[in-house]
Image (cartoon, rainbow, N blue to C red; front, side, top):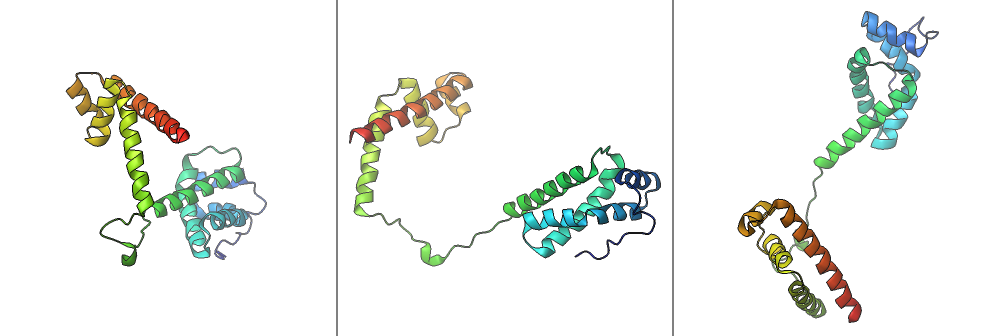
Length: 194
């Protein structure tokens, strides 16, 4: 693991703070290297815990080293070890977030169908739900019903509905939220009755 982080002679007796001060004063990466060598197991362990692969953990370790070269110059740190743990964890989480953004999914063509297949009972359930929804819609106040229909059925924005109804955005927003809540309550009651 990262064999190039070998302790430089004469730096083993210096405290973390002394090494940080020397690095800031002289801009000599050897002091930072000595400091990170002390905590290489901590950094590598955190990286491995989050990234799960040795190569990714080693890459992250090097990225953290480069990040610290910049960060340490401007930061006042009272407890280097805990600060380093937080920096390492945050760096790994950022890597994972970036990977998540670029996640791709391949679809098997055999799973794709032109028309959805519904079991006859599922079709009946959908029709029953639709009738219940229509019934519950009719029980809403007229403004709630209009706003819900415009928003969900006609894909109008809050702003569009406000212009159509000559109402404030706040009124439209609350009418849609209250309408949706009342629909949910009504639908749950109808399901309980059956």
